[in-house]
Image (cartoon, rainbow, N blue to C red; front, side):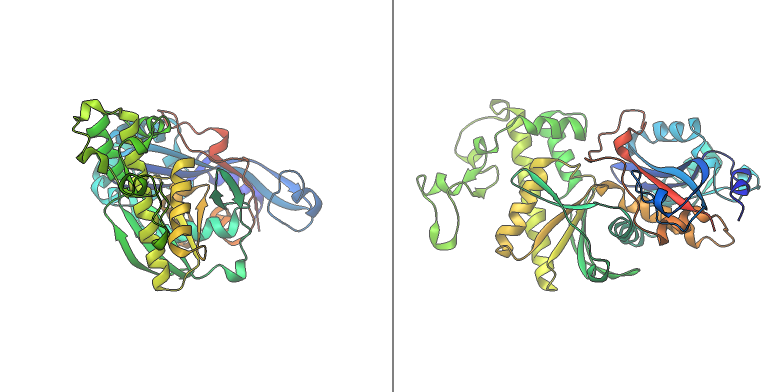
Length: 402
């Protein structure tokens, strides 16, 4: 295909919008093109770490963007899409807007389908939520350089993924609730467990107990807290001593919020930051332990954690890592993903590859070729109120045009 043809076929610089509409958050992924150019092998492997291509091949250069909105503020999300015309590019080239479709997943793809049709004039092409989670995780692990990492004692260490030894693994997606999925290959997976104690629990209980109005506010509050003021530790029970016989240190938590039983205090007597810290610790510990127990069921050594509950938050990752390490006696590893919250949206984005009648090379090449380089050295998603993407919320990439 002549690269000039691609521009004429696109209705806007942005294309292939995909949505993951969850119970708490809406996640968006979309591709924006910059320019076409000719590059050779050497240029393709220079400082921008583009996709490997043959000499003097035409490429589309662009960026994968990520944004999020609270689901309760879906109208803000739709306004962002309309303002940037994200819904008008890439689908049904040359057709009228009434025929445009946008890939979407999550329960909200059904709940808000009529509203989106009314506001944007597009129909949602709904993709299965579990299919998209797995496809998104596989996409990241195969295509994005330095995507997975461990986090121990405040230190992040990126893990080189062997493509021939990727499967099987356990994918733990911590959204409003938690799903645990055994992944055996592309499109081969089984949801083996889950828990209703997840990100929605942290946000909901935290809002009731601290009056915080947002997840990020609650997470920031927990930075300042001390959970030992409220949590009952082993040392509190054993007079400062450890319980060596079963391997419990004096600082191990015996009962989350346990000190509230005997302190004879009211909620107002506790600092909100201590409550937030204890709550975050309780949920992170619980998810880490249940995840390991499911990995143990199937003899899995690697557990990848995703979902917007984590948010690249150091204390959350450290708590999960310590829990997995403790219960597995060091045999299993907790691994985290830089684009943790966008697995479902990325999976929906990748599903454009299989859209009947589509000859657009963008998604096909992004999905099939690797690696894509990430444009940032550290990952943290704390999107602005209007969903504008910052530089560290995108992936720079080049797409070979065949």
